[in-house]
Length: 105
Image (cartoon, rainbow, N blue to C red; front, side, top):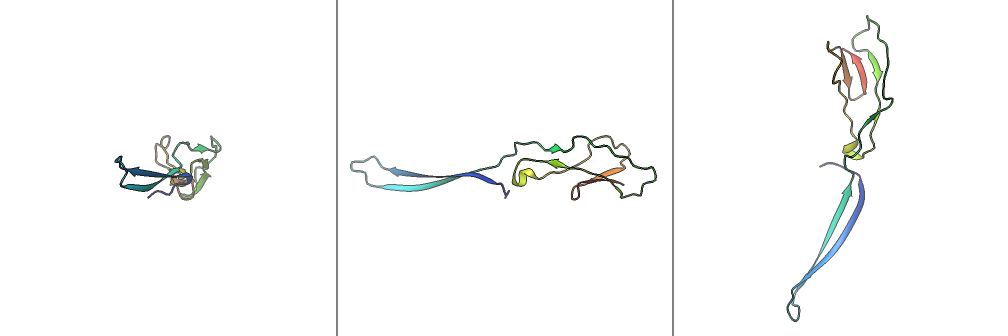
């Protein structure tokens, strides 16, 4: 089950009864509606561009840069995952989602 932040909680009560004359039976029920956060905000890199330099002889496993992004959703909807989607043709870099660092591999 996802853990989302509760924004509002409403409780309603309803009654049902037959339409006889006189009404013979009735029943009550309660309903609770919980409004939670939805995934409606996009993550944003801060800063939006990174520039760094790596020397040719850098040791494998060296952290090149730490990435940072913000997300205004709550709970599970605010969890971020990073990955390289283009530009690393030789497969020389990797992003660690735990430390949010870009490494030479």
